[in-house]
Image 1 (tube, rainbow, N blue to C red):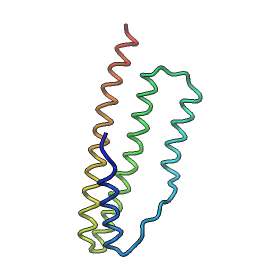
Image 2: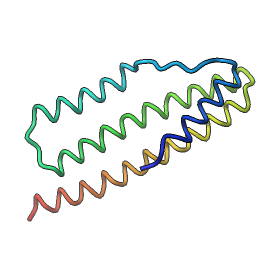
Image 3: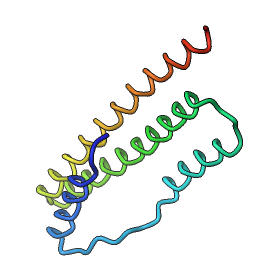
Image 4: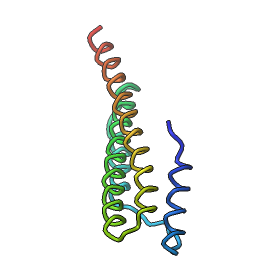
Length: 120
């Protein structure tokens, strides 16, 4: 899996360029994805393979949310003429898209493994 450190560093640079201080905020959407995952594990006695598939699905949903957030931020930065911020955010967007691709590929491999196990 990819490291979040470059993403955080880019975001810190964006905040510095805008003379703003970053502040952590709770995100109800991501909290909902986490709750959905936790509820699934609590309510189902799923095999390790099914649990892994559900986890990759949860990760993919989180990545889709982050991709949408970065896309919106880039649009705002462009509209405000904040070219360097848009560039840094664009780097982060590409990282999130790559992470999504990795999760989707892992999910496909897991699905094949789980499916093959169910047929044998």
